[in-house]
Image (cartoon, rainbow, N blue to C red; front, side, top):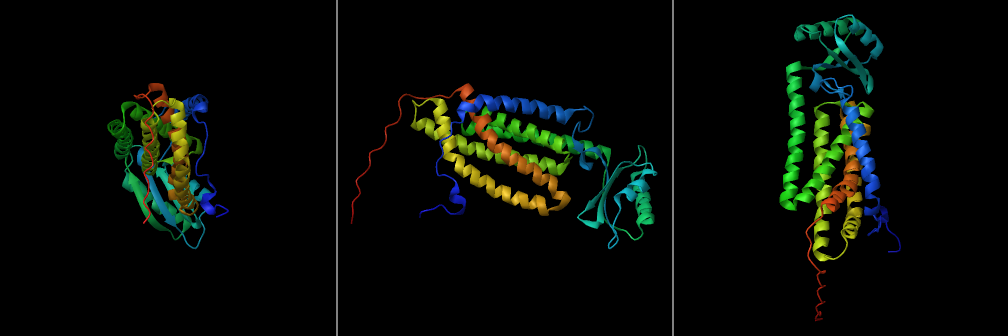
Length: 323
């Protein structure tokens, strides 16, 4: 063929010198991590610091309402609920003007069930005919347990990845992979804080998915790296890393693009419920690919690896018998 159709516009083999820029990108990554941690924690108030905490982690009530075919005025609903003693009021339309999501927290010490009933009566009096599609209530105790369980799950996932890579490869490979995972998680939290995406259980699920994706990409690069270390025992370590990444780069880009296309569709057509999850995973895929190249591999260079002497000789070609 005289041309490369569709996806084959990507070269079969690239020759980028990634290691040469490792220090520059490592410095930028450290600065980005520091900034992300600050944005995530500031103003240092529980339960979520600088994150836009969702109902799962701070408690409260979420109602999905519909007044079809009459449109819902969010400002009118917000004003009606302000005089009831509830706090953290948020009213957001859901696609159609006649559907909305109402969030609020009951006053401290108030009976939650009674407050929900009062709010429903108030919404009915304000909007007329209202259908309450769903009502979710999370108490403060449950929300605290969910937050602790979510953070514990993230920590155990990273620890499990370290042990797996240590068993599968060597300790320095595991340290490189975990460094990349921490990098991805911290920067993802920073992105959530900057974009004010609601941080809830869906966000935790998205971050856990990012951890799995990033680890999968890192393992693929590490496996090729180990093969080349055995084959080219006298080649400088930096050149082996560059060669290994270049050999897997096209595969990584193609794999990432398939996931990106699906997530873009989910972000555009999945509605407000899935928008945050889609954006988090899109960012995670991009940053996970970057960390496999400029975080995991450079850590191995710092620690070094055990290597033998000369390169293994190439096997001679065997004569083929034509029948």
